[in-house]
Image (cartoon, rainbow over all chains, first blue to last red; front, side, top):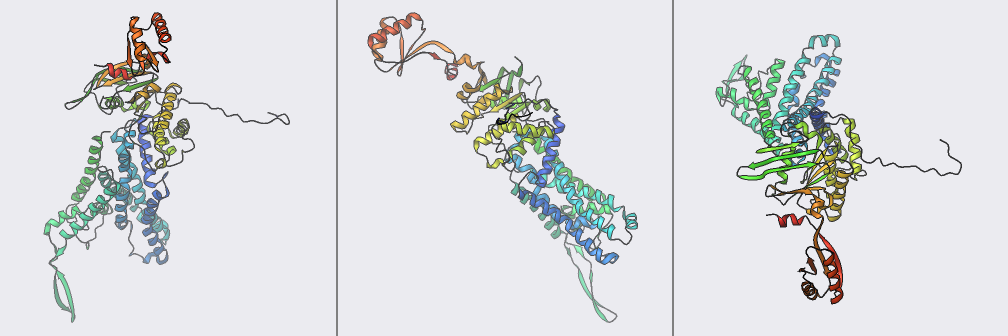
Length: 324
Length: 299
């Protein structure tokens, strides 16, 4: 279009008014996906302020930090560094950090929706309370799983790259990969459902976090006390002319009951199941640290099942009875 | 007219308490008011139509479906609650995109709809601010926007002007009226404020003690009556007496004299009496019905 010289050019603004929507409507499946992705974004802090991103970023750094340190040591010392922990030990190393992450972030997903009553807006849409809560659980599980795997991936890559013959190393140790994947799922599921079940019963994030941390600490301390070894007689003797001291008859305070009491240690349960996946046991560890060590392998697995399925049941029950 | 909501013998009991009893009414296109005092059963009716509770007897149908049997029917409904129901730590844009998706819209469409609706409710400039920083009026607009973002057929608004100052209330009612009449989204407006109904609604369903007291067009309740109102500044006694002498009964209501059954003969008589007594006339007009009369006249 040409403009005559000297003619002023005026833009025109058209108000199209309200436009009806005639695009696709994907109903309940889209609603579930939306709740899931919103949950993931909430945990990671996407679309939220800078402070909301700080903790997840710190936690991911913390989860990978030990692996990075191990890899650096390996790269300098080579195969001489056999003393370093391997994939089977890694979940134990980062477990405390995982529990703290669960305690702080799980309430973030459920409590504000009830406190601010945003849940009222969700439940009048094509989504049920069960859809809502399981989308949230799955979202949190996804992030925890990413956190759990992040360090393992760094460690695996580091182990392969620092080996004298990376290909041989990968061939010899490939079984670690399905093991850490399976064990990671089990650890992440535990870290997800227990804190979320607690968060479902309060609208206050701080109360939920404090309760979850308290629950883990109390279970840890109680188990430690009840399974503490006693009666470790120290007998003096001589070997080759030198005086030696030897412990004997060490037994937990609660005797054989300690085998079962150790199942109360909430931190130890997922780690014990992880150890079973990796087929490893530390014979020197305190009884409280290894849940159900002297029991048949099926017992800690059943305990793990109870610790995860009961919270799932509680979540379902609590959200089924919520009325707006 | 298409029936959007249909209540048939709708009853809801909570133990010994009856919240809604044998309610039968229809909500069609346009703006329909659900009027009643607190405890009249308005919120119960809304919950029944949203499928959040099941009726004790009777049925509540939304767009021909029973909402408590399938959550999918809610995809074409919008709901704005009376109470606070917004997250504080996200922007209005982010929140609306999310709510559009929870209503079933794909992400790309949800983004466009969120921007459009925020413009329509007057929050275009503020859409990237966190909701926690909004004023009460702006928060009410976000609540309305989330109810409209998926372009529903019908929106249920529960006390939408609650907590607003007179200016904000007027703006909200204009927005509701525009939504119901220009956007083509039908509205059921639940309120205890008759002014809100008179301002925005085409029809009204009046609930009292859980029962339907009246149903009809708002204009039917506010149309001119047979009563003539004669507002004069002075000489009320003289005028009343003079009219009485001519066989016309005038009832004094403050500065106003009400004359029943006004016709041409009575108008002539009133003109003559005013001229004769010299009373100063301020207003002479037929009385218009008011929604308050519904409650005054109900048993």
